[in-house]
Image 1 (tube, rainbow, N blue to C red):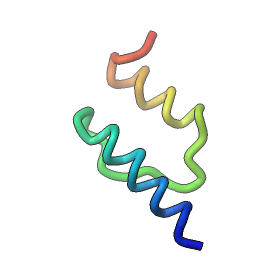
Image 2 (image 1 turned 90 degrees about the vertical axis):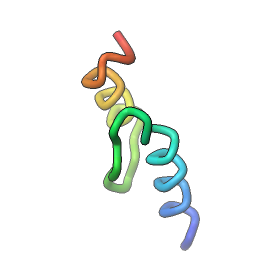
Image 3 (image 1 turned 135 degrees about the vertical axis):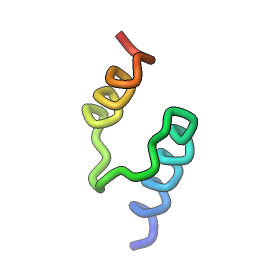
Image 4 (image 1 turned 180 degrees about the horizontal axis):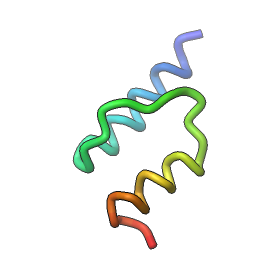
Length: 43
């Protein structure tokens, strides 16, 4: 039961330099892609 929150924390840590401080579970590729696009990192 502890794996999903641990993964969520790892993703937030990886995106922290972009100002991300929270993501709702489930974290989908679409959510991450949207964050990257909104931050101007991905096209």
